[in-house]
Length: 481
Image (tube, rainbow, N blue to C red; front, side, top):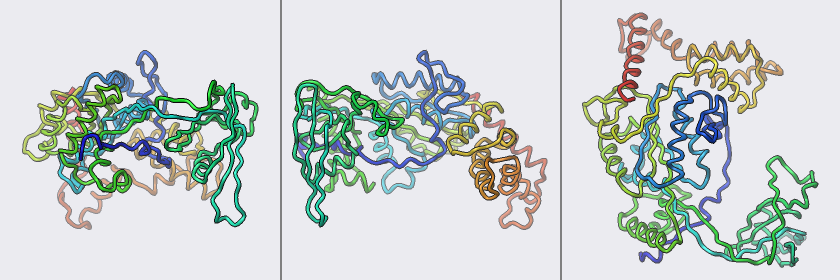
């Protein structure tokens, strides 16, 4: 494959995303002001002010894009918002900066070597901003006429009238353009741009002249000025694609379709070398610039000693992204060895990491998080029920309390209630047990279970073991920070 034949695909990111309510779907950013001070409650983030402020400093470092190969460790007990902070960083960076997420255990289940999986993850987190000039038609839509044949078999045709402040023109539309306009839901009063080479239609916003058309407005309606000058103009278009996407397009016979199937397989080193050389050439010519992004690896203690050695070497590359890893382990064994280390990470790699510690949430912060989750999950809940749920969260865990919200809402629907009340929360609390009650149940009926490994262990001894584990985790935090 000649270096000049290297291709990239600008349409890769043009996918329809289906939003579902997830564990962190309420996160909109890090909740920091311009001075990088953490607001108490903002953008879905609550508490963890020190950790969020530290993440904000890292964020500024990423945006400047001057330093490669820096690594950050988010360390704290389970349920203290480590993944939430990483998600907040991703949202704050926006679409332009690549942000790749993976769980450390993923690399052991892929049909490729561990180092190849990590290399692909690294290259997903490095973007290339490619600049090119293209001819576009930009104007305000005056009228859209679409002829739909009665039989339905003939191709659709139509006419599009566009105007600027100085001129107005009528364009004949073919079937492909009719489909593109219908997909974007283009109507009279919209300001659009059409790429002449690809036929891609982009809706820029709604004309200020139509700002009184309340029927055609929504909460996210953006108003723009009617374009000036000629309808046809040359414009610099910027595409951001990841190095991994360019690798896949150039390494498989089916091209970019491999991105959708997920069957990328192992990519040869020669292909990557040619792509790196071509990207370097584009940088010198001013056609492209490299955008170092973020690679987030959750549960990093699940990596083994080979992976940690690879990370040490990969972070020294000038094309390395910012690496953010998270773990909830204290002093534990490094996978693949018999040695113990803080967080299960080798000391030489820990030396490279900036460590951000997260702290357990207070009862007040748990209440604020539960309020946000009730709003996100569209659940009406009484103050008494929220108070009870907060106490449950403080005594058991925040994750357990959050999971009871939807279950309580279903109980409320069954009794045809207007809002979730104390009785609904109490009912689901009795139906679904937490870890402490589950352990108590196992102790009471341990003789009836198969493969019971603690035949003579009493309740006090179990409690003592759990306390030791928690203290061990806390000691791990002290050693690391």
